Length: 242
Image (cartoon, rainbow, N blue to C red; front, side, top):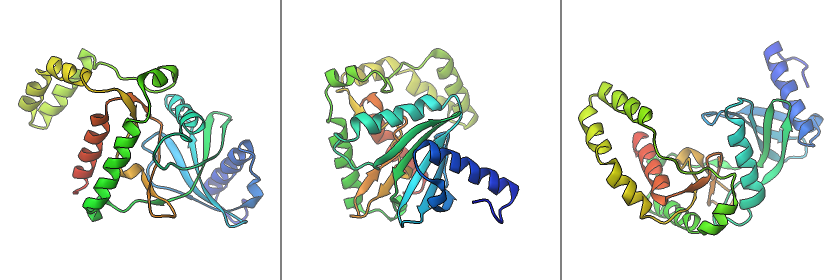
């Protein structure tokens, strides 16, 4: 597999071969591998093409701080993915490969940029999220102790947020919002608790062979409130110009 490659390419090639062996796949059947853009989740993501004509996505997480998130994602695919009411990639294999957590997933195409979305696309996403948020009761979620859990923001993070907003010239707005923390906490407590994606933005949306949205990157899946997903989705899309 390493013929004609630079040393750096050969090292990557051998690393992929090691991960594939851990996943129970023969690396000699790998025809091509392409690193995909991203990696904000602390993972290396590769699109793989095999000699038999099949393709897959390999997600490799090596950073110690991020491996619990990768292991959470593996448990999501094992325990929850078959029952959630949204399309998700199919888990082909998972393994611990030395210092890495590896997931081999079915491949799908990236969703179009939200700049090109119409009302029907946003409505499809809203329906998906509504179904997801109402798919599990509090009792069921309580038994899944590996899910991410909500937390109150500590005072030092509040101070850091105010300082950051002040540097952007928005300190007065930040102080006004943070001055309403107790009211905001009460409003959140009044909302139903459900299953949330946790990292809900259009970069984590794929399109499957039928043209339907497929939700990827479940490292932050957890217990929370539906508006958390909606707020991040809207914010990131607006930052992107949508």
